[in-house]
Length: 464
Image (tube, rainbow, N blue to C red; front, side, top):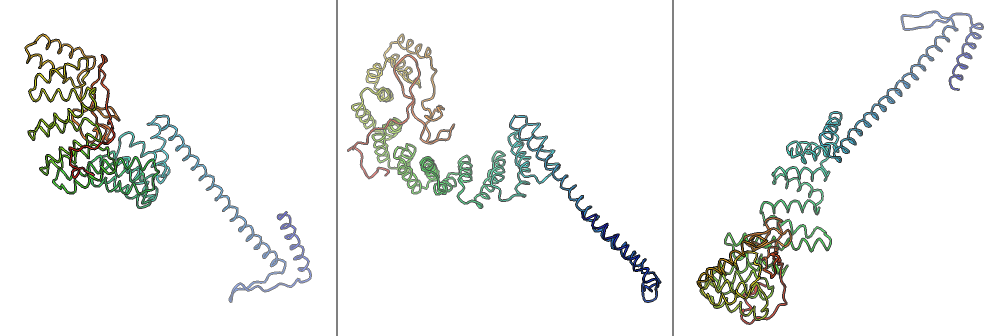
């Protein structure tokens, strides 16, 4: 419509120019400058003006149309590029999820060749390289992604994982601290920093982070679980203090651990060792004896036995065993432990009389068969000793370690406060002997008993 209006206007202008030209035939002097002039008829002047205006309009419309064409072309190219980038990224993700690692890497590298600033591709490709143990390449990609989006927590956590797997622990902690600058109570960052400190036995630093974690607004269930971890960390800090001779600080941490968990055996063991370090052997024995009465854990019996023999007071240990058996005279572990002590003290007849009542007992450590064979030899009965040893060789379960973790079932030759396999505290327990022919010993956790007053232990030396 506008075109027809424009044509109509042009025709009307030409007609008007011809009409007025007939009425005004005289030429008009047109000055082009101060020195230049020319004569032109009105008709030509009008037509020249119309032509100039038309040309100007055409040029304006042409520029606008060209600009529109250019913008449309750019938009189309941008859309095609984005579609191509999205296709590469989707193909890379699908290949990664389908475990076609090489294809995933190829697709993502094609994407980054077109758009080196694509943070999602940098993040995913870095994660793939970390999974393939190419840690330096993963770190390089995630550092570039971080430079593009410094406040992206996902990138910071991925970078920290790269550095941690590359065993660059201090740098990993720095990356996680960067996340804490953005979110000071972020539990994920705190968990990761704490675990790195634990992995490197930096117990004091792990303890400090754990304090922050417990204030990070965790759920009630998480608080209970993390309180158990805090108990273990307090024990480890106390153990470190004990090893370097800072006894007062060690006492403080052991007491705090016991306060958090009355049944936390490592801290009670550590408290007794602290008293021994101070030369208070009797007090250490009293503390462990009271802990045994409270927990019923046989671990304290072995510690007490070694301590009383070192003190030259085996009678005290015999008394403890006899009192324990008077409360539970059917406990095979107590009988076995007392029989071992008799044998250790060269009380051959007492050891033989007691241990011979444990016929059929499956001792996971194999100590019972060895002691009984030695006792028969001491009595001159070599034939019975050989029979005992043959029975030991025919056991369906080979002789194993005396301790096992109640969480991961890993066995250990020596007790420690923390399982070396799964890293949990207070889980190593005696493998208890049992009667039967299966040879499969029963694993013991703690055997809790009700706390009872024990007049033989002085209360001032109770840890809490």
